[in-house]
Image (cartoon, rainbow, N blue to C red; front, side, top):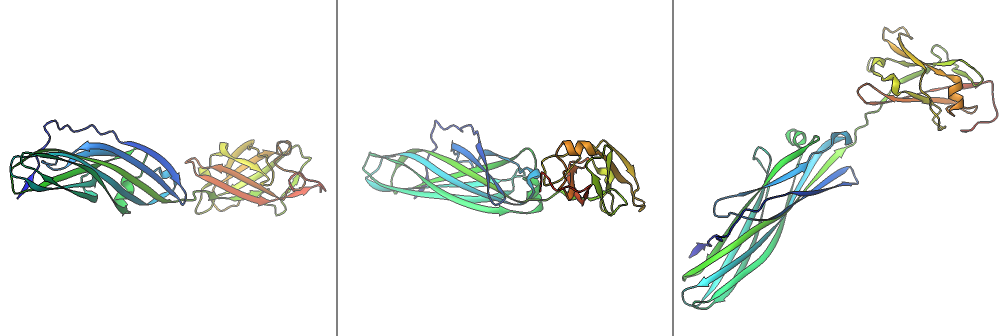
Length: 323
């Protein structure tokens, strides 16, 4: 006959403290490994809930495209069998199931581990069964709801439901107790695509001029305009973040002042900037060999912007630091 083993009278649910480490892997993935320590299962009354706290994906890294989840569960068991009947061969079957669930209790994945022990037990004798077994199961989540669930700045409170069973096959009279435990390693790998949020803007050095002359001996200012388009408004630019300089040189200079003005007559307000020419020269942001000026900065919402325009140095020079 099949008989359920009696639960150990000293059974206690162990407190779960999920310990995790975080690593950044190549190929645009981030991985979290959560270790759930050995916990005694109340296998006579359904699942034992084991909390698993998973750090969410940092959306500033890019766009989350898939969540790869796996559980490596380990079953550990110990049983003492007392035989009050004639000598007999005794077989014990152990099994655990690890059910990983979302906060709403819906199932993410389920993995089972089983093991079997056999022993010959003499009349009024006893036997001890102990051992462990491992199993791994995995799945990939990419629904809109799951991507939203796993993206943020906090943690996702998942639950690993540990369920177990122990059965004993014998034709005689036995008494026994057992301790069945489940440990697990939950691995969550976030796969994401890097999103380029840099906005390329239209830069015009010396608005209205095709030559864009820069006199290194000038004591005045260099006018530069960021033009608005149908897809981009210069009003969204944080002027205090702007820097201008030759991309081949190390220096860059902030504007002296800025103003909103419709420079090209298209009905859209552009951003007019004025840079000190002496400051550009002394900062190493332009020299006699410069042929281009590039501008960098950000919008008021934090998105990066870049833009560039060609220039011609006057009067001519035969020497330059950057070329």
